[in-house]
Image 1 (cartoon, one colour):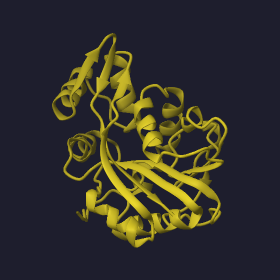
Image 2: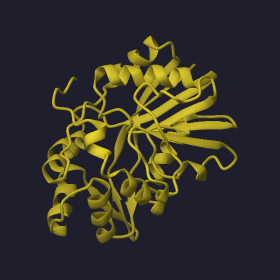
Image 3: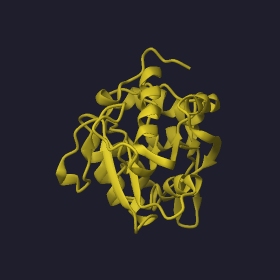
Image 4: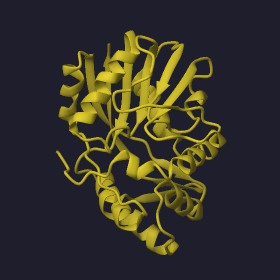
Length: 247
């Protein structure tokens, strides 16, 4: 579905990318299940070189300690984040071609329009070696997560938020780019927090929300996404639509 009001990646992340990457890096346990789902879905065998684009903090090293992991993003990233990150565009210009065993990403394209999504998939194809794997998870069109982002985050963030989200038929874009063995699956990958205060602080900072009463945010998260206490920790419901293809 095409959203003519899609918030561009540059508008959404330009002033926010450094805090975003630092937060993900500083609290890797929060989104561990999300990264674990990505790694399991990618199903890589002893990869030597991995590209993550857009960047998502330094978490993949936990899963691939022996791999060289490079990162690129569509907006400049300061070195103070300790995330070494090249600057690129939707076509992945200036990134080495025929070089990577895998290109992995979480929510990479919902701030891209239809043409930019196509450019991204074709750019990933060019970056991969023969037999290389693309794997990514995205927010699905008309999901509870898309409603949370385009209604609540849009209303309460400094930059607004409107996304153009893929559906399962996005697999055709990968196939048109000559990827083989293309698959797609919905996977639950809950975000996990130590307590409600950490939950509120993390969500506020990650999505660039304006300060608000903690009860208001908890009520919105409960109604739009749902969360539960498991032992001493808070599990926030999170589900993504994952795609995979082989060059």
